Length: 383
Image 1 (cartoon, rainbow, N blue to C red):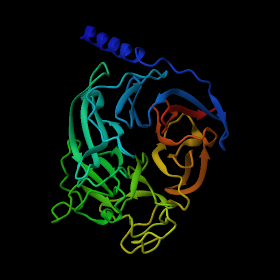
Image 2: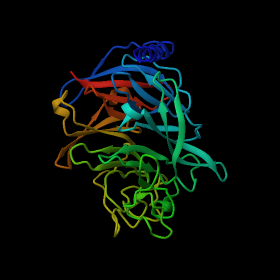
Image 3: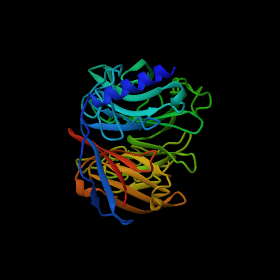
């Protein structure tokens, strides 16, 4: 057993060191309301990275690249060769390999979950799919990958896949699904566009989902009326699921996701069309029977990954949430009183980089991915 463990450790080391060398770059000191922000590049050369997940025992991070690669990045910045066994993805427009999360029981089952754009729709259209496989001990292979969920019908020509994954405290898997830039599908309960769905880890539908048993309604649906939700996180203090989504031109929003609720798109929105014209279906900023945003940006930062901060390392950040912003090229920090947002700070704007994902690391630092052809993974903390 000891020999097998040592061999696996050796193989993992070879995998990482045989790939890209350690990336060395100086730490930058940037401005912050709470003291000097230290931003350290961990690695570069990632091709449009989309998400990261931390492996246990300082084995590094899994990082997805939108064109279809899953890699291991070590704590000191070595990048592995692509992991084999990853599904073929539909890498067009906003589509490709997207989110990654580990099973809550990863140390026992070594299961990795991936969301991605999957082709096969009529007229070369695509939809969001989610599958899982077991990561080999040497970190080189995703074994026995199986699709557990498919967005139906497939309607995307390259837009609005959503795709964030989160497990709640009870072990249910939540998945965000964009409306594929087909607005009214977000209100159609016979379709999986513009929804947050809730399933078991094996893809089965829980009997207590809000629409189970209703004719002509998809039983996976947990909430609906979403546009393009690219942020999803479990609030560690309340256990609630928080989601953020892109508005059109204006109207990016945060929602606290509740069972069976309608979050309004496109009937209610704080945004307008990119043409400058109103959204045709919109009844205003609010609409009867819909839940208003928990927080809204009238000018869209183009928000993406989201992380609550509950570590002890940086006291000023406790009970804050951090959100990546693509268009405004910043990391957004929100402060709360209870659940109410009372203050916002924009960080890292000096780097002029599209921030796709942010996660709290096991060491209490934030880890930030930039969505670029030569994307960077940063480690961020207070001096």
